[in-house]
Length: 251
Image 1 (tube, rainbow, N blue to C red):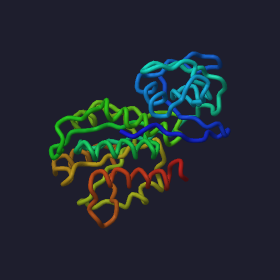
Image 2 (image 1 turned 30 degrees about the vertical axis):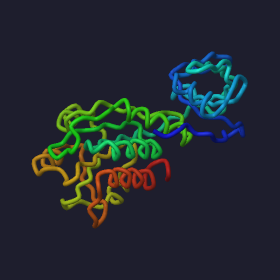
Image 3 (image 1 turned 90 degrees about the vertical axis):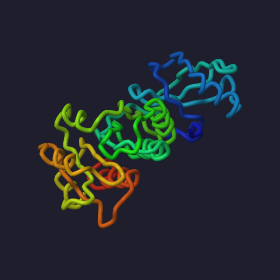
Image 4 (image 1 turned 120 degrees about the vertical axis):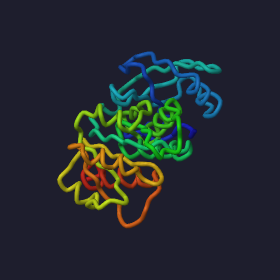
């Protein structure tokens, strides 16, 4: 997994940017995780009084300083808010389970592209039989730290595709339909804006029965990603980029 970022905040205050579950407010004492303490003390060689930035997905981003640190323990003191929390447009990714390296890469890039929920699904042609949700959540957290997001996407437990669809709340769902007749994704996005979801199937595509089941559902719209057949991870990122560029927060 990647290391934490060392960047400059919008107010010009340097310091590693870290996610915490703790509430953030002026003067708040915030515990570090063991990994954060190890990273700061042994990798970054930071000590008491050094600057960090903290966010928790609720209270915005805060300047803070290291209050105490030793071995695998550290505490921070929050000093001032540097950015208020801002709402993010809901953008969900449903992804057929693929091999670990590809799944890790998609979790990182989907976080950078503003996804709010990563939902792994099992299809009839899924390559992987299990998904390490804790690992993906950690990758998403580190990606959010590095890309300056104020929130971390939720990584949901992997479930069969039909179960996810049966429990769906009606949010518009775009489906990459590579071998079916479907309008270009750009055409669909002229009439659609987040909140929206993006579903990408496994290598080899959906089986005919799965695709038929998808197309029977009123909230589903099949779309095409051009004339070439894309790998699952490529299609996931390409579709998310198109959504953000044509109707999301890039626009």
